[in-house]
Every structure is written in structure tokens, then in C-alpha cells.
Length: 334
Length: 276
Image (tube, rainbow over all chains, first blue to last red):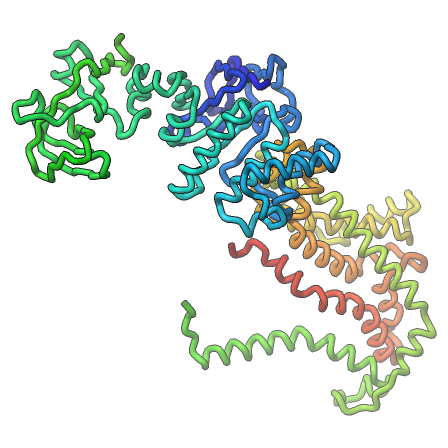
């Protein structure tokens, strides 16, 4: 079991309120991602749930039990840190065994779980090494192993992949997703990378300045962002925003259109512009188009074989049914 | 890339370093040499350096006159005990200052250090009275306590500096892994800080071993350590330089040997964290 409920949770450091009153329920077995720009309070929120920081107000319950004043060790949660936070003076085996040793588990049960975790995480050959002798990816696996063996009611991940290189990150992302499918345990994952959020989450919580901007499944956020912040944050490349007369003609303060919803068309297309930069990824091409009179730059996603170059005139046809309309406050107009 | 240092400059620096080293070491060397002289050679004018009649007579007399082992044993207990006690108190103190600092932590650290700026003689009278009152005069326990207290600020400061180098996330991981505060300090923090703790212990043993003001003023016979043993040979009258030197050599030999064997550890610990 691992249902976590936050009710009117606040956090202040001195006079600075970093988390204004916040309500959130994380369902048992759910993979929830906290995403937002740096300084949005996502890591603080995770540390409040972990108990590593005291909350300034409100209550945190785990499985219906008030956990607000329970110390981190007794909350039944496991955490994987950005820096891995392995014990450098212990072997991999002892690192993984540490939480079980603290819990006073019998030795043979410890050995059984270590063997199982090492098998699942490809660490069997490294059990007697020290963390300093491992690569970044292996260290992260040890950190995950140390979390798994406790059989926690929920896993907390604090930007666990941001110290890894790009290729390794994609691999570990899949491993963590598979781990979640296999264990079906609640996981809360903090990242600033919206691609990680979109690919891994059952539910995404978008945060800005301690506020929850929107909570929903990846596709809900993609299809109906509640405001311009979420619209701009979710999706890659970023959504185009058009303001001024063109938007007012459509009855909105701001119009949002995603790069994948603009088609490259013939010269008599509704929108015209000049290609600034063309990014050829092979499968796709991204055109950054200037001089449309709508926005400084419009980003357009086209199939890989479409070839325009810097300076070429280009015609663009937006799929008008994919327009997102926002009012002057940046809120979505239904 | 190695910086180019001219040979001449290297030579000057080397000479300067050796000169400074020899100046510091010379009194010790002279003491050791004098301990092997006769009392007449010890006060010879002009002084004799190496060419005299080497004798072990002084050591024999010193050994005969006073019970060296008793003083040595007192020194070991007082220096070791005060350091051990100090570390036991300072580890939790430094932990709290390094990992859960408050707005007053810096002030407390400075305030603690400021006690070292007070001349010891300024508090001799009250401490002497307290010792009489509590029956601690000339007792090993009393001296252990006093030396622990006077060195505690240094122990806390040194440990605080080492602990600051340890990432707080690792301790948080231990907390998440179910470790209590005691287990966190015992199984995670202390093993990681071993180099720092070792050099703190060594430095404090040396400081406590050589401490003379309190050991001389608060002991008479029973608890007197090696500093008192040396002092007993310092006399304004008579020709006792050679015997005094023999006693001094015997008193500093154990700590000198300890320092020699641990110098690598000591230097590593003292410069720990200075460069990353």
C-alpha cells in the first residue's frame, strides 16, 4: 500500500514561503512525476513527503495515517538521490544491506533480497566493489537496489538521472519504468525534464513557484493544458504562442499551436514566412520560421524528407482545430 | 602543467626551509645531546657540541631517583582519557553544527574559540577552589576533565571542519534507510570522517601530553604526569642541566615516536579539505 495525501501543506524558510497551501493525493501504485523549472519547489515537496524537511503547516498522511511528525526512517518510504548518496566506505553488498541491517532483518533474508536485487539490476558481479569503483549508471543501480530491498510503500526519486549522460539516461528511464510495472509500488519522481515526465508518468504534477499548475495524465496535459505555462512546458519542441490581432480575430488573447500541428504547404498557404534555422533530425525536421507577422519565431515540425534551407520562403497551414485559446490571464478558454 | 621554477629559486627556498626546520628542531636536538653529557660538559663555556664523553649516567640517576613509569602512566591516562572524552562529546556537537546549523552556530563556534584567548592563569583561582571543593586536586579524573575542557573547542572546531566536507545527502540517505541518529553517526558519519577524527585525536593527545600549566598547578604527587617529572629536575640552584635534559628526553620520547609514526596521517588530516 502506498497512498500519500497532502492536505494544506505549506513550507516556509524563514519569511519566504516556498510552498503555499497545497493539496494533493497520490494513489497507491501510481507513478507520479513532479515537474517544473528549477526552483519551483518540486524537490522541496518531495523532501517534505520524505520527512527530511519539516512542514510548516498542514498534514501529510501515508495510507490514511497522519505521518506529519513521523521521522523519515519510520515512514516506510525509500528515496533515490540525485547524487546517489551511496556510503563510500561500504561495498555494494553492504550498501544494499544497510536498510535491512537497520531494520534488523535476519541475515539469510538479507542475503536473499540482495541476491534478488543484484540479479534484477545486473549488479551481481559488482557486489564486493566500493561505489568509487563503479560507473555512474552502476552507482544509480546500487541506489535503486538499496531502495528496493526495503520493500517500501513508496519510492521517492529526486532527479535520479540528471547526473547521467544522455544515452544512459534513456536506458535507465526504461529500467525505472519497467521496475514500476513489475513492483506496482507507488513512485514519486521529481524531474525538470518534461520528456522524462511524459514518458514515465501515470500522472504529472506541474509545479511553478510552489503552486500546482495542473495535475493530469501526460496526454491530458498535452491535449488540454490549463494555462499558457503548462502549454509551454509540456511538449517538445515548445508550443508556439501567437498574440495580438491574429489571436483576437479568433476570440482569444493568446493562441497556442504546437509545432506538429502546423503543416508545410504551398506558397498560397494562410501563413507565410522565411526559414531561419532548419534542424534535420532524420526522422523529423524542425523549421524555425521568421517574418510571419504572428510571432517572432514559429517552430514547425515537418517530416524528415521535407527540405528547406535558411532563407527559403515557406508556406504554413495550421490545423485550426488544434488551436489552444487562452485569455489575458493565460488561462485556457474552453 | 608544471610551473617552471628556476633552479636558483628552488635552491633559495630549500635553504630557507631547512634553516627554519633546523631552528625549530635545534632546542630538541640540544636537549637530547645534553642528556648524554656530564654535568660539567653541560655547562661548559664555550659549549661542546658533539665531541664530549658520551654517558648514560644521567638516565641511570633519573631512573633511580624518580619512578618514571608512574609519571608516564599518568600522562598516558590523562592525555588519552581527555582526548577520548573530548571526541565523544565533540562528535555529536560537530554533527549538529555541521548538518543542522542554526542562525547562532557561527557565534557559538567563535565563542567557544574565544575561551582559548583567555589566559589560563585568569581562571586558575576559581578552578583551584572548585577542585578543592570537589576533592579533585591531584587526581587523574580532575586533570582529565580539565584538559578535556580546555581542548574541547579545538576538537569541535576540527571535527566541524571535516564534517562540513561530507555531503549531507549521504546522511539523509541513512535516515531514509531507517538509521536512528546514533546509528547515522556511528555507521555512516564516523567511518567517513576517520581521517579527520584520527588527526584530531593525534593533535589532541600531543596538546594534552605537553600541557604544563594545569598539570603542574593541580597535581602534587599521585596524579603528576611527565610534565611534573621534568619540572622536578628544574632547579634554580645546582648543576642539574644534564639530568633535566635526560628527564625531558624521556618525557618527550613517547610522544615524539607517536608523532613520527603518524605524521603522514597528521598532515593529511590537517590539510584535509584545503584543496579539493
